[in-house]
Length: 383
Image 1 (tube, rainbow, N blue to C red):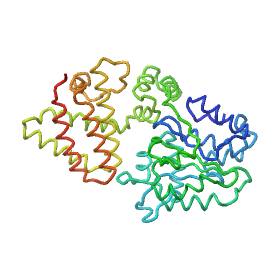
Image 2: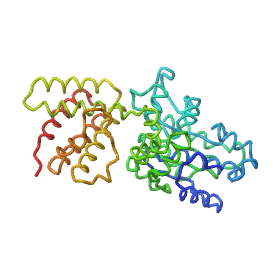
Image 3: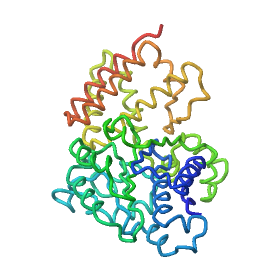
């Protein structure tokens, strides 16, 4: 089956197939879903469905050549745009076409991979990638040409929220008035980060996190024992990419967990303790040496942990999916220190830190300041 690489999401599959079969394909579509929900695999399957004229969808033998080209991501009418940055390989004016071989291999290995996985794959994990105006000019040029095979042309823009303003404005006219039989699929995790003029011109399709059962079954198909598969599925919280990372013990969350525990322990000791303040400064140095994408991911991890602690504190255990794997740290014992008198300020400080990291603030100052504020907030008394 054409959608065999897409987990779950049957209602979305059915919707996309119906629009293709009835000829009601919107020329600009925005697929929005959280990490690991299958937005990219779904877009690839849908593009193949359109490009291969719906043949081969349920019967692979009907159009083998077309399906083969789509499967290897070499179909001449299938185009991609995704965040990149200058690197050791490309010194200036980096665009997606410079990284197509890596992109094809990345999708083959990690179709549910996240943005940081991609940056790490092409060696730019210490930079902030973007979809820039050079990329937009390339896209306009490609899509102005006739399709090679006489049917649809499909452009998939992965992580479309990484388009800068210049690129978005450049693509706006294309989205408003695309050439005939041209379909633009914009994929995003954070819809609100895409400018309104783009969003308002797209048909928006929201993807939910994957069901725990779907992830568990997918892990069992990979040879994981049933009990372990469903334990991982619960912790993954709808994110198949995280489930695979946990299975392979390759999750960034395991590093973030160590940082978080070290941070919290030092913050508890720091009140009136000069040596513990020094520990916090050293901790800030360690985190500041990493790339900005890692720092943003870690801060988002901290947001999740604080919210999970709050839920534990207020006995909403059924909503708690996160586990701490480090010995000697019990999230349940930490939970009482996150309450109604400090949670809003903790969240606000973490979000401010993300904002400043994104804008290239001095990381050491950002994390040192955040650490001192966290010390004060965790010592606040509950009502």
